Image (cartoon, rainbow, N blue to C red):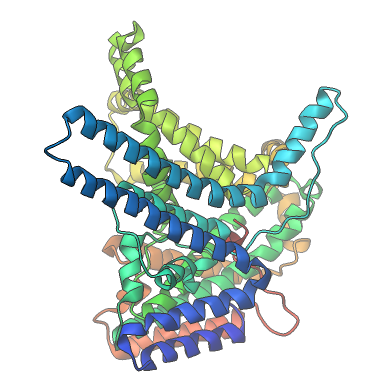
Length: 541
């Protein structure tokens, strides 16, 4: 059930009406549960086993871990006066070991399914290449595997919950149906955001009454999302697919233009999906986590990743970065370096201090790259971002000294613009890995962009062989300028909701904006009989 179909519009309308008209307030959440499973079964019936397995196994494991912790606490309380300090310490270690086993079982079972379905053929292919180089005849079999809808998102969300229960940050949910809703809530299943139990769960189970402003803001956010998706993203993807289908037929200028066009398309597509999802949830009184905050205004690649797919970054930070950076292995490495001869220098002392953080950042972004897909180009994508962040952390004193020597005012408009342009160029290089067929193709595309930059030939190819007319490019330009205008205002006023732009404005102005947006979608949107709408980019991840 695609977001861009009439069936989906009807489904959402019926769900919202059923939710608010449901007579028993205490059980309104059951409407959301039913709607979520109808959506999932309708969209991918054959995938249902996997989300059910994740739901049941995680729910049971969390209850088991909490029970082990509770029984242990009761036992310590009972034997408080009888046991010595060593006995209490030994009991706590046994309890921790049992809880770790439960956690490990849940992680291995669920992440194991994700890894097998998403990465088995990639790993088997790599193994076969190595065996071939070694002259061995054995080869691992390749399989026809399918990727269940939303598996990366609901697996990460469920495992985040499991780790939070293990850490004692949240209580395990006793009701399996409530937990099933948390995992399968339909607005977030396609491309996130990755919700946390603490932020999302209570909103799902609390009955909400209809509020005009919430419904208005939700509809405006949905409308804005469809403008970006249908007018901009689905138009731009035509030219992008034409070039990437066989990039060797295009020169460096055309390839460079395609990378820029992809930056526009990806921005519009991803933010559109998030807006539609948040708008649907918002109409029912549920505030989903912010997942996208105008990343192209970032002044560093680190800031870019704090603004792009925010919930994925938060998940990686909480459940991978901190455990790595604060682990004895990483901390001891920093301490050993501090005691070395290099560590006695001011630069060496800085490197020793940030070494755990920088290495952990590199590993995290390697995992971000792997999360995006089973292909060497995604590993390179993760390493590119990770290495840039790692070097910025390690070389910060050098950059600070150079800035001081050059007497650069870091808060000046010129320098801030330079930082944004520099960051955007770094991001664009990373995007080449996204649109290339593989790692070798990405390297070749970069080479062609530099060595075969014939402007007139390239622009002729863009205008005549990419499937778009000059009028289409004018629409894309207009759409980009509208997004830029809206984003600048949101950035200056720190407004995340599109509805907030018109807060306090005359009623007629609000409805003029809504009317113009609707008409733009009707006139310039890519849709209609015989048209196969492009899936949201992040559905493939």
